[in-house]
Image (cartoon, rainbow, N blue to C red; front, side, top):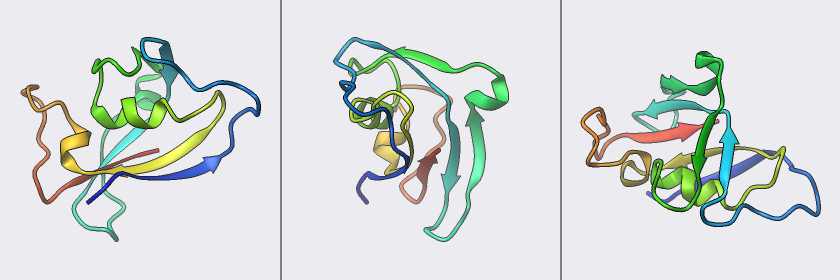
Length: 107
């Protein structure tokens, strides 16, 4: 499985993409998928918390998929992406419960 990204809403034209170390503020909903047709089970959401997720992009401060996808985005862009387990969690974190049969979708 590879990382797949679908642009749901185009961002602002003419703006640069974030650079390594730039602080980004995003809203997300994270779902664990057990198969390609499943809508998944929501496991985390910045929207549910009422606060965007802020992080320095490109330095490993978040899951690898966030670093990869956010660095391709511009302000106002909205994407849905599905990532393989190795990009959906930081393996050293105890709360990571992804396995090789599970993917992660973020909206």
